Length: 113
Image (tube, rainbow, N blue to C red; front, side, top):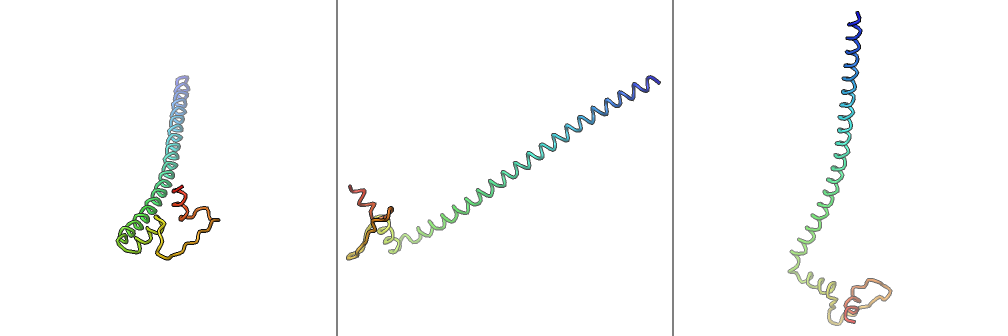
């Protein structure tokens, strides 16, 4: 009979050790799944951000492609001459608002001084 009691104690020790190992494995698997879930959320957020950036860049490409197509037209040449070079048509009068901080027509004057 004494042998049976010792056998039962050994079986209980083995079961509790087995339960402990299974518990640790479950915790490990749970933490791993939680970590992967958060990584997936972060990757999804980055994917959406990059997708928005791609859409923005595609719009810019379309605008620039249109400008390239229109670059041979006289309207485009006139626009560049007025906006970037500050040129005016003959007998055209330009009024400069001195209260404006960013007046494109004042930039050539400031650069000459």
